[in-house]
Amino acid sequence: MDILTGLIAGNWIAILALIVAAIAGIIVPFVLHYLSKIREARQNVINQGSLTIYINTSARVEELCKRIAGAGNADTSESALSALLYPYIINELYYLGLQTISDIDNSLKEFENNIVRFAKELHKGRVGISRGECIKILCDFLMAKNRSIKQMVEYYDKNSIHLPKEREPYAKEIKTAYEAAIKNL
Image (cartoon, rainbow, N blue to C red; front, side):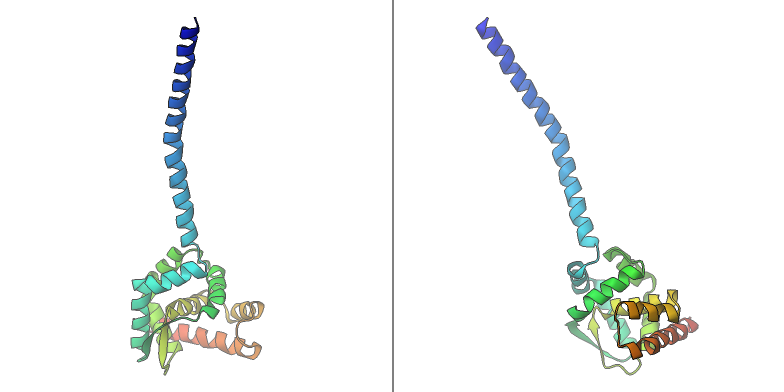
Protein backbone atom coordinates (compact mmCIF):
# COMPACT_ATOMS: atom_id res chain seq x y z
CA MET A 1 0.00 0.00 0.00
CA ASP A 2 2.77 2.39 0.84
CA ILE A 3 4.34 1.96 -2.58
CA LEU A 4 0.98 2.52 -4.35
CA THR A 5 0.26 5.65 -2.30
CA GLY A 6 3.72 6.96 -3.13
CA LEU A 7 3.17 6.41 -6.85
CA ILE A 8 -0.21 8.17 -6.81
CA ALA A 9 1.16 11.08 -4.78
CA GLY A 10 4.15 11.34 -7.12
CA ASN A 11 1.84 11.39 -10.15
CA TRP A 12 -0.28 14.15 -8.62
CA ILE A 13 2.79 16.24 -8.12
CA ALA A 14 3.82 15.58 -11.71
CA ILE A 15 0.30 16.37 -12.95
CA LEU A 16 0.19 19.53 -10.86
CA ALA A 17 3.60 20.51 -12.24
CA LEU A 18 2.32 19.98 -15.80
CA ILE A 19 -0.78 22.11 -15.10
CA VAL A 20 1.35 24.91 -13.62
CA ALA A 21 3.72 24.73 -16.59
CA ALA A 22 0.80 24.90 -19.04
CA ILE A 23 -0.68 27.90 -17.27
CA ALA A 24 2.72 29.57 -17.12
CA GLY A 25 3.17 28.84 -20.82
CA ILE A 26 0.02 30.84 -21.50
CA ILE A 27 0.38 33.55 -18.89
CA VAL A 28 4.09 34.32 -19.20
CA PRO A 29 3.94 35.22 -22.92
CA PHE A 30 0.80 37.27 -22.26
CA VAL A 31 2.47 39.16 -19.39
CA LEU A 32 5.62 39.74 -21.46
CA HIS A 33 3.53 41.00 -24.38
CA TYR A 34 1.55 43.28 -22.05
CA LEU A 35 4.74 44.66 -20.49
CA SER A 36 6.24 45.38 -23.91
CA LYS A 37 3.05 47.24 -24.87
CA ILE A 38 3.30 49.32 -21.69
CA ARG A 39 6.96 50.07 -22.42
CA GLU A 40 6.08 51.01 -26.02
CA ALA A 41 3.23 53.25 -24.87
CA ARG A 42 5.50 54.98 -22.35
CA GLN A 43 8.03 55.65 -25.10
CA ASN A 44 5.27 57.02 -27.33
CA VAL A 45 3.87 59.37 -24.66
CA ILE A 46 5.25 62.87 -25.04
CA ASN A 47 7.83 63.68 -22.39
CA GLN A 48 11.27 65.23 -22.51
CA GLY A 49 13.00 61.90 -23.16
CA SER A 50 10.69 60.71 -25.94
CA LEU A 51 10.65 64.16 -27.56
CA THR A 52 14.45 64.34 -27.50
CA ILE A 53 14.74 60.90 -29.08
CA TYR A 54 12.15 61.80 -31.71
CA ILE A 55 13.84 65.09 -32.61
CA ASN A 56 17.28 63.47 -32.81
CA THR A 57 16.25 60.41 -34.82
CA SER A 58 13.30 61.42 -36.99
CA ALA A 59 14.01 61.76 -40.68
CA ARG A 60 10.75 63.73 -40.97
CA VAL A 61 11.97 66.32 -38.42
CA GLU A 62 15.35 66.62 -40.13
CA GLU A 63 13.84 67.00 -43.60
CA LEU A 64 11.14 69.44 -42.49
CA CYS A 65 13.69 71.64 -40.69
CA LYS A 66 15.80 71.68 -43.87
CA ARG A 67 12.75 72.62 -45.95
CA ILE A 68 11.83 75.40 -43.52
CA ALA A 69 15.38 76.71 -43.56
CA GLY A 70 15.45 76.54 -47.37
CA ALA A 71 12.13 78.35 -47.70
CA GLY A 72 13.41 81.23 -45.62
CA ASN A 73 16.95 81.16 -47.01
CA ALA A 74 18.22 80.31 -43.53
CA ASP A 75 20.82 77.82 -42.40
CA THR A 76 20.03 74.62 -40.58
CA SER A 77 21.92 74.08 -37.40
CA GLU A 78 23.07 70.77 -36.07
CA SER A 79 22.36 72.08 -32.60
CA ALA A 80 19.12 70.80 -31.21
CA LEU A 81 16.26 72.84 -29.91
CA SER A 82 17.08 74.13 -26.45
CA ALA A 83 16.09 71.67 -23.75
CA LEU A 84 14.88 74.65 -21.72
CA LEU A 85 11.99 75.00 -24.17
CA TYR A 86 10.85 71.39 -23.90
CA PRO A 87 8.50 71.80 -20.91
CA TYR A 88 6.74 74.70 -22.65
CA ILE A 89 6.53 72.85 -25.96
CA ILE A 90 5.29 69.64 -24.32
CA ASN A 91 2.62 71.57 -22.44
CA GLU A 92 1.57 73.30 -25.66
CA LEU A 93 1.44 70.00 -27.55
CA TYR A 94 -0.92 68.58 -24.93
CA TYR A 95 -3.00 71.77 -24.99
CA LEU A 96 -3.33 71.40 -28.76
CA GLY A 97 -4.50 67.79 -28.41
CA LEU A 98 -1.27 66.04 -29.39
CA GLN A 99 -0.78 63.32 -26.80
CA THR A 100 1.83 61.03 -28.36
CA ILE A 101 4.92 61.14 -30.53
CA SER A 102 2.80 59.50 -33.22
CA ASP A 103 0.38 62.44 -33.01
CA ILE A 104 3.27 64.84 -33.58
CA ASP A 105 4.63 62.81 -36.48
CA ASN A 106 1.19 62.52 -38.10
CA SER A 107 0.60 66.28 -37.73
CA LEU A 108 3.99 67.12 -39.22
CA LYS A 109 3.16 64.84 -42.14
CA GLU A 110 -0.39 66.19 -42.58
CA PHE A 111 0.55 69.87 -42.41
CA GLU A 112 4.08 69.67 -43.83
CA ASN A 113 3.61 72.07 -46.76
CA ASN A 114 1.49 74.46 -44.70
CA ILE A 115 4.12 74.50 -41.94
CA VAL A 116 6.84 75.39 -44.44
CA ARG A 117 4.75 78.29 -45.83
CA PHE A 118 3.79 79.39 -42.31
CA ALA A 119 7.42 79.34 -41.13
CA LYS A 120 8.47 81.32 -44.19
CA GLU A 121 5.93 84.01 -43.29
CA LEU A 122 6.70 83.93 -39.58
CA HIS A 123 10.50 83.89 -39.78
CA LYS A 124 11.29 86.26 -42.65
CA GLY A 125 14.94 87.29 -42.57
CA ARG A 126 15.83 84.72 -39.94
CA VAL A 127 19.44 83.57 -39.79
CA GLY A 128 19.06 79.89 -38.83
CA ILE A 129 16.87 77.10 -37.56
CA SER A 130 17.72 74.48 -34.95
CA ARG A 131 17.04 70.79 -35.38
CA GLY A 132 13.59 70.12 -33.98
CA GLU A 133 12.39 73.69 -34.27
CA CYS A 134 9.71 72.46 -36.65
CA ILE A 135 7.96 71.06 -33.54
CA LYS A 136 7.67 74.58 -32.07
CA ILE A 137 6.58 75.88 -35.48
CA LEU A 138 3.93 73.12 -35.59
CA CYS A 139 2.65 74.35 -32.22
CA ASP A 140 2.47 77.95 -33.46
CA PHE A 141 0.77 76.81 -36.67
CA LEU A 142 -1.87 74.75 -34.83
CA MET A 143 -2.35 77.51 -32.27
CA ALA A 144 -3.03 80.04 -35.04
CA LYS A 145 -5.20 77.57 -36.94
CA ASN A 146 -7.38 76.48 -34.03
CA ARG A 147 -7.41 79.37 -31.56
CA SER A 148 -8.40 83.02 -31.55
CA ILE A 149 -5.90 85.71 -30.64
CA LYS A 150 -7.69 86.08 -27.29
CA GLN A 151 -7.39 82.33 -26.58
CA MET A 152 -3.70 82.39 -27.49
CA VAL A 153 -3.01 85.34 -25.18
CA GLU A 154 -4.92 83.63 -22.36
CA TYR A 155 -2.85 80.47 -22.88
CA TYR A 156 0.40 82.48 -22.89
CA ASP A 157 -0.70 84.32 -19.72
CA LYS A 158 -1.67 81.14 -17.91
CA ASN A 159 1.62 79.42 -18.80
CA SER A 160 3.93 82.46 -18.48
CA ILE A 161 5.02 82.23 -22.10
CA HIS A 162 6.67 85.40 -23.41
CA LEU A 163 6.83 88.61 -21.45
CA PRO A 164 3.35 90.00 -20.70
CA LYS A 165 3.74 92.92 -23.13
CA GLU A 166 4.86 90.50 -25.91
CA ARG A 167 1.98 88.02 -25.66
CA GLU A 168 -0.67 89.79 -27.70
CA PRO A 169 1.75 91.03 -30.40
CA TYR A 170 3.14 87.48 -30.74
CA ALA A 171 -0.37 86.01 -31.00
CA LYS A 172 -1.20 88.56 -33.71
CA GLU A 173 2.08 87.82 -35.48
CA ILE A 174 1.45 84.07 -35.69
CA LYS A 175 -2.19 84.62 -36.70
CA THR A 176 -1.08 86.98 -39.48
CA ALA A 177 1.60 84.50 -40.64
CA TYR A 178 -0.98 81.71 -40.63
CA GLU A 179 -3.46 83.74 -42.68
CA ALA A 180 -0.75 84.68 -45.20
CA ALA A 181 0.39 81.05 -45.46
CA ILE A 182 -3.06 79.62 -46.10
CA LYS A 183 -3.93 82.46 -48.49
CA ASN A 184 -1.13 81.18 -50.75
CA LEU A 185 -2.71 77.72 -51.05
